Length: 148
Image 1 (cartoon, helix red, strand yellow):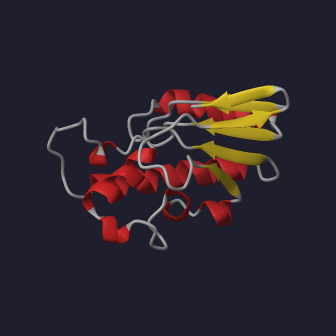
Image 2: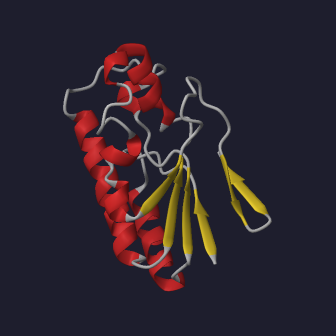
């Protein structure tokens, strides 16, 4: 059984909804959890959000996302977990290309590395590696295509 979950938008997620989702995962024990885009919001580096914020907010957003991913892995130690890159996750790549081109492609400067996905055994389905604009992104689950 595969479970598809969208739109967590961390750090703007609903704590009660997240708790219920974790309880659901523990009860159902899916073979495959698919995080279908917008797991992280990356609002601090969004070109659309002009609200001034403090300097540590982005770091806290990343730490919170890591913590939630670790909790998913603990709840589903043997399940396949796939995170599909959505346009909010793509904000990191876009930000680096537009504002820190020298850092783009360096080790540690990508969503999979920032969130330590290899250690957590979480697959990351990214847009094409040379994309400079977000493009629709899909994975196949049997006869079903899941995409953002």
